[in-house]
Structure formats: C-alpha cells, structure tokens
Length: 122
Image 1 (spheres, helix red, strand yellow):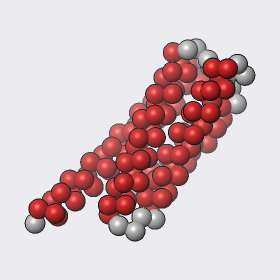
Image 2 (tube, rainbow, N blue to C red):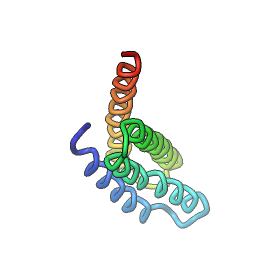
Image 3 (cartoon, one colour):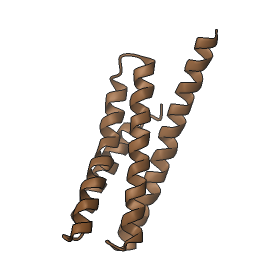
Image 4 (tube, rainbow, N blue to C red):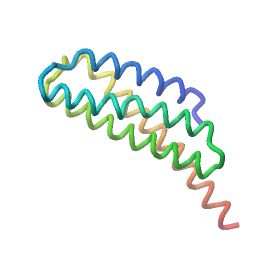
C-alpha cells in the first residue's frame, strides 16, 4: 500500500474543508459545499477504516469505498470549477490531487483484487 495514502487523504480532507469556506452562500454554493465536504472528508476516513480491516476482503472493500468517494469528490470539484463558484487558482491543485488520489486508490484496489483472485484459483 502507498505508505503515505493515509496522510495524503487526511491532508486532502483538510484542503476540502478550507475550500468550503470560499464557496458562495447562495443555494448552489451551499448544496455543493455539503456534497464536497461529505465526499472529500470521507476518503481519508475510509482509508483509515481499511487500515484497521479484519480481513483482506474488508480492506479491499473499504479501499474501494474510498476510491468511490474520491471519484465523487473529483466530480464535485469539476462542477464547482465549471460553475465558476471559486477562483480557478484555488481549484487547480485540488483537482489534480483528487485525480492522483483516485489513481493511487485504484491501483491499490486493483492489486488487492488481482491478489485475491490468484489465491482463490489455487
């Protein structure tokens, strides 16, 4: 497992919280704020749960949930960017980091699935 994924997703969650302070107070801003806060902070929470998993299957399941949350967060970031709700300079690094986190989590899930398939076929 990527050794820093726990810290990376924790730091990402903090950056999402900071972003939420800059979303407008209008209806769209509030709805998107709630969405991105939920998905963006749950990535790290699910990674943390995966680390404490009681089996390989549970680990893979929790990491897959983290991956889904990362994908959702990436979507909301793109939506916020496309709607011009905050300055592009505030979003570009977050969008890139969300993409990287998706890749890392996707790789972890893929390797775990491949490993479990190989073990079940033996």
